[in-house]
Length: 80
Image (cartoon, rainbow, N blue to C red):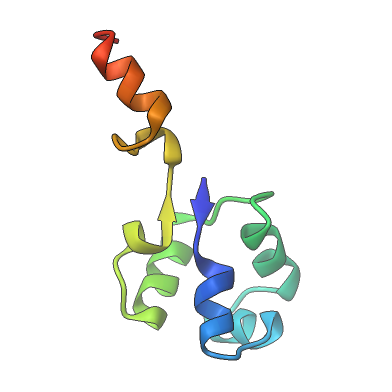
């Protein structure tokens, strides 16, 4: 799963530690999510969405489900 967490955090000039405090998780958890090594739980994703004033889908997304993705578009065209 991809995410915009690092970009959103940087736009606010927050450190990973500050974001971690705001979401009640460790800095290591934030780092793991930002680098794609860990997908957040649904409750954590909801907390992040509330914190940034966004919908979960605006922060976390699966590129394989993006119909504008060349790979998905080709599969849809092929009838898969």
